[in-house]
Amino acid sequence: MLNFSKLAIVLAAASMMAACGKKEEAAPAPTPAPAPAPAVAPQSTVEVLHWWTSGGEAKSVAELKRIMQDKGHAWKDFAVAGGGGDNAMTVLKSRVVAGNPPAAAQIKGPAIQEWASEGVLANLDETAKAENWDTLLPTVVADVMKYNGNYVAAPVNVHRVNWMWANKAVLDKAGVTSVPKTWPEFFAAADKVKKAGLIAVAHGGQNWQDFTTFEDVVLGVGGSKFYQDAMVKLDAKALTSPTMAKSLETFRKIKSYTDPASPGRDWNLATAMVIQEKAAFQFMGDWAKGEFAAAGKVPGTDYICAAAPGTANAYTFNVDSFAMFKLKDATAQKAQADLAAAIMGVEFQEVFNLNKGSIPVRLNMDMAKFDDCAKLSSTDFVATAKTGGLLPSIAHGMAIKPAAEGAIKDAVSQFWNNDKMSVADGVASIAKAAATK
Image 1 (tube, rainbow, N blue to C red):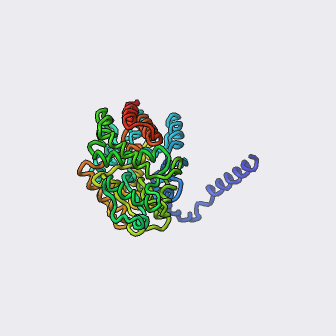
Image 2: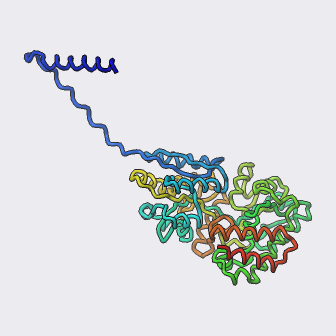
Image 3: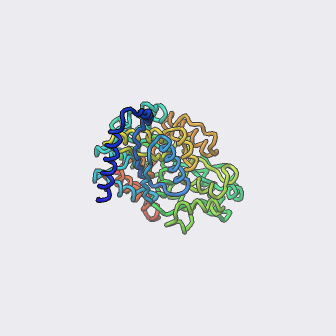
């Protein structure tokens, strides 16, 4: 402190001497004042919660970060590992309760409406209108992103769930000359594979895998309207109908073509069985394509992607999305709007989905850079959006509330794992589960 005081006295004396200098001396020319610096808009930090922490997903998040930085915003990554997002939701709840939500969080399906009903989500209508979301999105997808008619979330992609994957070499070896399009054709092909000494159906033993196959069967046996009535509206009459009984009979028959080691198997290990020519078929969403790609396999040459039997005119979807939370700061709100626009933008939609194996959610996207499976998926996505065949996947959290979804998953798996349970008891068990609140 003493040193600073002495310095201040010296500087003050020097100033006084300069001020008392001789008047006849010419004053130095004044130094021009520097030009004012251009105004810089205050940078806002965009905090984004997600669970995309590996592989192509992480690359895609990095691309979104770059886009936001180019718009002048700082990116704060709020990544919580855990493929299903359960860990992330636990963390998110604690943040929201504490009054400190992130700008955006990865949330999908009916969970979006549940968060919105708590009054914590931001209204994105201004951005949606400016970016023409109502024109770019199928109505059934747009409705998932809305609460009381207002956009509160931005969709990232579309996964088709009702895919059937097949190894071409296995089919050739078994003498299967065409891809089965109906369930009778499928069982005829499966018999040939079994006779050739190979596994017909690669399956894993988790309830969501059971349910993924089950909803394929319900759609293939009953059609789009029945699927909508039974699995989305949870209509008691449809749930207890002869069509549901036939669906369970078909579902059980599929199990007879799986191998004894399937209980507890992860989905990617089941996919590996198809890749390695140990099994012919797998029923799984298009995230399985990433496994084929990683193994250097080419669609149409090494493997086949086709709609599950009986479902060629329908499309069950799983859409990832980001819900936006209410923020008080105006610059933060601007950054949030820019984030929503970037998520739906052509640039990010292309890069993200090329990495993820899914397809863009925009209806007008150029698919030139995508593989044949993605092109077929996009064609069917656009077509079914017009015909009413575009349907939410129950198995992947897009259609009904979590409590009912969980109960039905358990009932379906109980039937799958208990060969002694009658079809009638299976129907009753699923109908009872659907009534869970």
